[in-house]
Image (cartoon, rainbow, N blue to C red; front, top):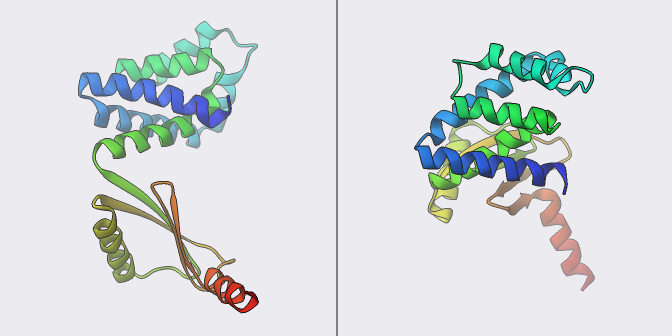
Amino acid sequence: MNKTDKAKEYATALFTLAMEQGAAKKFAAALETVVKSMRESPDYIEFLCAPNIPLSERNASLQAVFGGRIPEDVLSFLKLICEKGRVRTLETCLHEYMKLYNESKSVSWAHVKSAIPLTPEQKTALRLKLEKQSGRNVLLECSTDSTLLGGIVVEMDGKILDGSLRRRLQEVKEVMNS
């Protein structure tokens, strides 16, 4: 089982618990807080992953840093992934958790790549078109990709909508060669 599959398994278990408690949003915020803290202190991740430091010390550290700041079940989740040697999957767990959370709220996340930055008006028009097409609320994550000649590529709900100039030129080439 690869890293993403394990992270998905852990995230699903945490999300199920959160839904049972009606605390999915609270757990999501807690996970975001933890991931942000970990990003700011990469040495802390190394500490939590160090096999030469007793698990009890690493758990005590998690308690000291996050106890009272996040729900107890999220803290227990952190201790579990620390015990299982999976702290480095935390960001992937957050990503998988957020996919489940957004799915439960009928929200889709669209990753948009364009050759040049999209204007706010273009982003709004694209979001509205994707919402109409999917029947869901859509959150856009936009980035530029210098390898695109023009146009955009949208990845949403496991599908890729390729409106790039490169793809259109490839289609013309295929037509000419057939």
